[in-house]
Length: 101
Image (cartoon, rainbow, N blue to C red; front, side):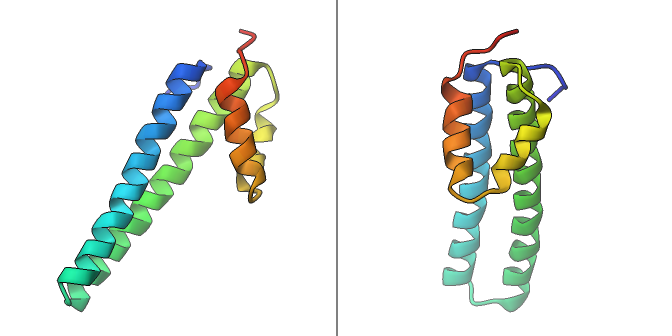
């Protein structure tokens, strides 16, 4: 991921990949806790899941920031990602708004 603006298609694919990674890690955590009643293994998967969540958050911010720049707005709008419910509408806006660059 560079600092270049990205179009709607690349943004959608990037977000899809991010959510697949995120939900996959949660699914693995649930499987480990359900089928392997081992506290050490559960702790290790919890740490890995936390790292994956941090990675996904950074990736989402980067994708959103690049998309915002492609639309022609200030990069500060990426802070809307942190507002509950507004973030869903904001991501939908980023998916449908045509770029100006």
